[in-house]
Amino acid sequence: MTDTSTTRDIYSVSRLNSEIRRVLETSFPLVWVEGEISNLVTPRSGHSYFSLKDPYAQVRCALFRNRRQLLRFQPKDGDKVLVRARVSLYEARGEFQLIVEHMEPSGEGALLRAFEELKARLEKEGLFDSRRKKPIPEFPRCVGIVTSPTGAALRDILQIMARRWPGMPVIVYPTLVQGDSAPREIAQALELADARGECDLLILARGGGSLEDLAAFNDEGLARTIAGLKTPLISAVGHEIDFTIADFVADRRAPTPSAAAELATPDREHLLHRLAVLQGRLGKAMERLLQRKRVQLDHARHKLRLLHPRQRLEQRLQLVDDLERRLSQAVRRLIQSKTQQLQQLQGRLRLQSPERSLALLRQRLKDNERRLHQLMQNRLAKDASRLGTLSRALHAVSPLQTLVRGYSITSDAESGRVITDASSVEPGQTIHTRLARGSLLSRVQKVEE
Image 1 (spheres, one colour):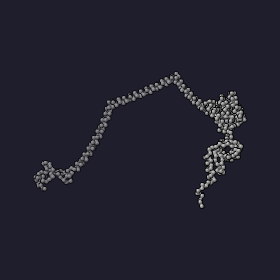
Image 2: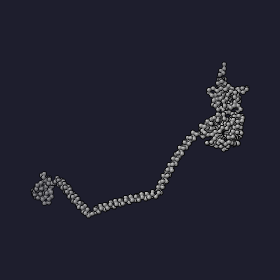
Image 3: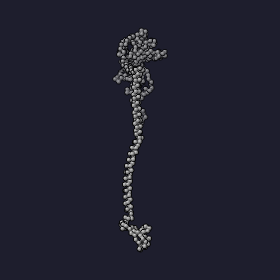
Image 4: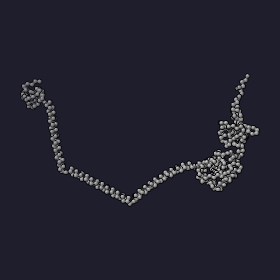
């Protein structure tokens, strides 16, 4: 029996749905589908799920929250809509579905094409050129509002103007803002406000809505009327994501009517703060200016004092006092110098006097005599000491000292030659013998060797 599990590629349901979803999503580009909404539900997650149908078929659709928040209207059952969507498959139930990326009411596409064609034509004519736009006054004296007198846009504008710049005159030019006759009425209201010249700034305002609701502000005749106005105009039509032909032609576009009120009026609190800052800077500038002027004034006063005759006289008197003081000091220094010279000369004279020289010589003579006497005594004492030393030394080596011990000295009586050898004496020879005391004179009888 053959094992078919190794030769067959068996799909699981989830794998099959996953691959079908990939085939559908990669095979179809974004598609535009028109139909009627039915079975619309929006759970707490914020995503919307519905069916899109025509008389012959229907398809499931999913509109996720991040895309639903971008819609300019709230879809409901029975609405005919045009959607741009991705073809996909909900794998959990195997249901074919569309993932909606964009939704608009049916018929809005034709309006959008007409809007783009008119925009391109007017832009080519130069109606949108920034060089022809008029500047918005920073502090308007009066503001005119062209809008529906019953709309929320007017209430928002008036509230913000009253808060930001209370007391500023406001004139409302009522008109329709929706419907077939609305473009003509809006143009007439603008022309009336411009012709009367009561306001130096106009605001054209309307709340948000679909492209069909804002069709009156995409009218060519209204655009040319706005281009011909002499009064600056702020266009505040719809919400921030809404753009109309009137926005492009107007001198300034505001994303909302409330923003238009902020553009048209200065901020009182901001101006008060700015005024306080400028006041502080002005005060500091005045203080610096006054300080400079004080310095200049002091300098001028000083120069005036220098140029005044009394000042010059005081300077001369001060100079005289200074010269007198310097002269007195110079005289004192001269006297001191001469006195010192005199004392030096007297000293030198005393040093060179004969009396002093004699006195010095006498003193020197006395000193020399005293020194000579002292030297003589010292020399005698030294010589006596030396003589004693030499005498003792001589006495120690004297032959007489030998004689005292019993010795004697024999010499030839005639020649005085000391006899130290008996052979040098002859019998009958006279000899002289010296003893410790006295001497003997004898004659030699016999000689013995």
